[in-house]
Length: 257
Image (tube, rainbow, N blue to C red; front, side, top):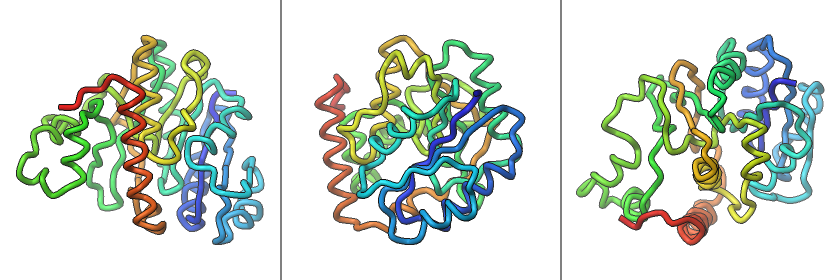
């Protein structure tokens, strides 16, 4: 099988419906499977998937296992030579999946790749970035970045219009294509991350092992970006950000400034 599309969902039934519909509507020529892992949603997500998308492999968790652990559940079951981690708040265009696989097939050194994420209004999102410094992360989370923006701009690669394909440090887990061989080399997502920064950690581990990470703007995916997260509890999300940042910088020798 060419591709396993893996979606982790939590209380975003309407987004998930649109995402799944866009996958099947895109009519890929490659062989593929779709695995949906639901983290104990209470909004009817499970019933919707079972009734409207019976062709998808569906896993229903009894509690919220977090993003990394839920993805790993599906990764262990998946059969594709590539695995696409895809957020439920995304929409694919026609031929997107075929083009993603073709891009990786032409780059055997690629352990991972990402496409260009765009907002519903067409604005380009910063979906590929440099590895962070602690200063950039802290500034971005406060109004101070409006006064001193250089570390944040470097982190977001703001000096580039993101219009050409190139090797980058990491790409967002909202749409992250992984080579099976590379995953077997570096291991699955680190379940020490409940939410956030597990994509940075994985790309860092790929780089350490000699794999490359690519950004390909020729493929565009609509991403509603954090609207799904906004349905959660802000205090909990803030806490998870802090916990993940702390864990990332304890785990890897990333610079502070």
